[in-house]
Image (cartoon, rainbow, N blue to C red):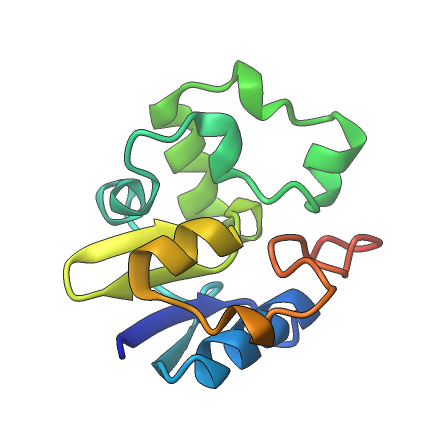
Length: 136
């Protein structure tokens, strides 16, 4: 099983469910605070790979939900600068195993990456934060 560095927003119910799934799948977690990590554009970019910029953003963030911020209209460099300035914009969680990194918690993608006990996922969608009223 994998030792995962797991960056979360403390208190996020979605991140709690994701950690439960990872632990039930036999993985070891090194949990860190996404909001206090000294991010740089370069370190954040490693988590996103070739994914479109729109997938880098937390869809539950109030600015994104309201349409005030349109991730589809933002370039890579600007998105990274915004996220360094305001980490609540970053899709959660950020995870790292060795030198491999991943942003967000798509069950199939995480399962293909490190393996999950799929019976531990249950009916709730761990990709989406249930804190949709605040996005924080």
